[in-house]
Length: 461
Image (tube, rainbow, N blue to C red; front, side):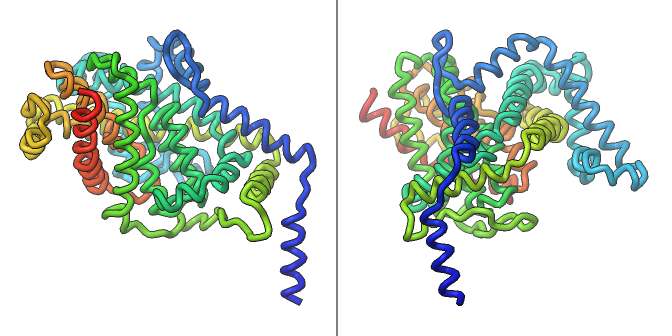
């Protein structure tokens, strides 16, 4: 009886036919998602994506008011969390309030610090180390406006990638490449492309949502978040221009891609990433099945997975509500942490010699790799842990073009920096600690530096 049932089920799977409505429900939203997130377009000489066009437009339209608006949001986040702590249990039963404001004392303290830092910076009072243009000013006026608009549009439109079958289809198709090379499911390729074309933060946001939905194991989510959240082409152009190597952009970005692939192959195979458990997020469990039945082609199975995923969407209203909640959750829960931790990281980098001390071991290594001005370049190898743009700031005063080239490559391939990506990962449910992030940062630096230096010497200089 069981054998007969199995045969019947297999026959039904193999001969599955889908209505035009079902296929359109998968294809149209997925196509829009691809156009918004993954297709590069050139606007006014700048390579970006559809999402980036919208983000740039909104930032240009209201950019001057974003620091004030987000300071208010940060204050609402801190005050709301304090009030919920002393509120009666009946208030906490509201799922919206409970999720946004009922947090642990540690995160509450960080929200309060973030709000205070924002107020100090906006109004220009308090310790100068906090409201300096190089610390709190960088976070409030440069970083947070970009994050606000990117997270707004990314959260609103990300369901087009996640909810209508695109991840399931692509994941099935490219699994044979991603699994042996990076030990990852095929859908991780979408994370990488979303980062590459759009923003590293979008990639981390995508990874976090996939992990919490049961599509990545703890190890897979940790690997994807720390190895595939690559900087966008647009930001790479900014770095290249800042370091005055934009005339070599093709060679520069080719080097970034090669070194990034090398690190993505090696890092998942060594601790701490190799020791992460291959178990799924416990409250959800495993929701992914990429193995292709022998009775079906890879393409057929991919279409089946995609159509079934799209069929789970019962109403547009439900998708929109979830997307809007994600925007509010990020603004209320994440941006305060970026303000707090990002500012502290920049204070350490700007006003203490800690990163200089940590960079001393890199001087002999840079000399060994025949990188000119090694002593001046060494701090750039380590300061990127605080913020991705700091290596470029340090490297801008170096005369050697080869050294500036290597610094530019390293600033993009180290990936993990606390002012943005690091905060995202610590706040997420992906099991990565601050110490582990620093270790992975060092591993990526040690792995990619020789590759970048070798390519610079042999191919371009």
